[in-house]
Structure formats: C-alpha cells, structure tokens
Length: 285
Ligand SMILES: Nc1nc2c(ncn2[C@@H]2O[C@H](COP(=O)(O)OP(=O)(O)OP(=O)(O)O)[C@@H](O)[C@H]2O)c(=O)[nH]1
Ligand SMILES: [Mg+2]
Image (tube, rainbow, N blue to C red; front, side):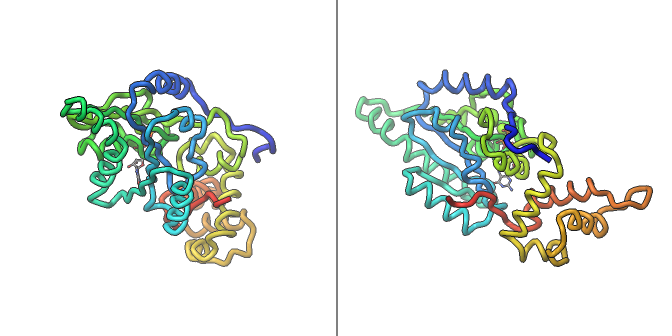
C-alpha cells in the first residue's frame, strides 16, 4: 500500500532539461499547444508547465477522446472555455482533424499575420511549441500536422527525450517536447490516475494501490459497464474481483493457483484500452 502523505516524485533529468529549454525558447514563440488527455482533463493540466508560458496565444487540445466518457469530455471543455481557453477536441479517427487543428492555429497567429501584412511582409513564419505530460499524444499531433512520421510516437511514457524543432510546412514550425510532469503531486490520487492512463510507469506505484483505486472508482462511477465486463455482480471484495478475473480470463500458475498479478495487469490493460468503458477519471469540482 502507498503510505498516506507520501509524495510521488517522477521528474527525471530529461524533464528538467526540457523545462529549462522551454523557458529559453519562450521569447521566440508565436503560439503554444497545450495537450490534455480527455480521460484526466484536470490531472493532465500541468500547472507547473502550462502556466510557466506567459502571454502567448494558447490552444488547449483534448486528445484520447475516443477512450474517454464523451458527455464528461464536453462538460470539461465547457469548463475550460468558460475560463477563457480556446479549446479543440480531437477525434483520433476523424479524417478532418488536421484541418480542424490548422484552423484553430490560424486563429492564434492571425494578429501576427495581419501585422506583418501591414508591414509588407507577405510570407510569415510562425513558431510554436507543443506541451503536455508524457504519452498524451504530442508527437502524434506533430505527425498529423506534418502528414508524415516526423516525430517518434509510441504507447509508453518518455518516448520523446529532447526538445526538437519540427518543420510542419513552409510557414509553420513546432517544437516537439518530452512529456513533463509536475515535480511532485500533492494529491496522491493524481499519481494513480496518471499511472492508469499510461502517463507514468505503472511500476512506480504499488500494484495493490492501483487496482484498489481503479476498482473502487469503477464500482462507484461505471458500475453497469464494470458488471458487464466482469460478467459478475459487484458485491464482492476487490481481491475477489481480481481472483474472478484470474479464474476466468488468465491461465492458472503451474501449481494450479490463480495468477493474481497477471489478473491485475489484464484489468489495468483493459482499462487503458477502454475495454471496460470509456472512462473519465477526473470529477468536476
Ligand atoms: N486511442 C488514442 N490513441 C492516441 C491518441 N493520440 C495518440 N495516441 C496514441 O498514444 C500513444 C502516445 O502517443 P505519442 O504521440 O508518442 O505521445 P507523446 O505525448 O508524444 O509521448 P511522450 O513523447 O512519451 O511524452 C501512441 O501509441 C499514439 O498512437 C488518441 O487520440 N487516441
Ligand atoms: Mg513524444
């Protein structure tokens, strides 16, 4: 179990280095894209990182919407819009997503474009940066914009290690950046949520803490879907739920016992792939 009051820290050297670099390049930027994972619309808002970029036009881009609770995503977007953010919800499978992003970016750079036109500069160059916690789809967005695999993207945290300049087209340049976390999380539930969606490595937290957090959350908020997934009622303990998954879905160990850890990993993986339900973990305050 995770001790109460124990802070989770995961701020390796490359995150620190990238934060310093982002600080340095700020003055050259025309816009900033902030990535929010729709499953954790508040826990993926990295105040430490996002609020460090002052007075630049910003776009709050919601990724992984196909894995999140759609009604809740719309509510969370309204919340951010009423706080003054320009927001865009990205559907991974939408063929028009590139155009939708470009349209929003155009809104951000219009003042500079007009200013340049007035000064007789017909072809402007716009420089931006894409920021977010690990594994939320930053490099994927770069590739969508560039219409080719410019940036390495894969389903694990910490794929991008450096701040890299990416030429999207003749007028658009965007820095891809490594996922950056808060130096520490005051609220230990944030750590659990980020591990469940794959933004921090799951082995950083005790497995029993993770599965108890997830099962309690699903019982309370997505009971019908969880019941169908398990094909069992929910009036049993969390340990029995894992045993049930182990008996029905995972091969037994050589000695005939339930593979308890294998069952936990299957549950966590099915959750991450939205096989239980499309879940939003953050509640509106
Ligand atoms: N289902 C789904 N998967 C997505 C979406 N966006 C990105 N992915 C996947 O999420 C994984 C992580 O994407 P990346 O683009 O590497 O994420 P990143 O934010 O650059 O990650 P780091 O560089 O590690 O910080 C990849 O497997 C992508 O294919 C989305 O909207 N929906
Ligand atoms: Mg990346």
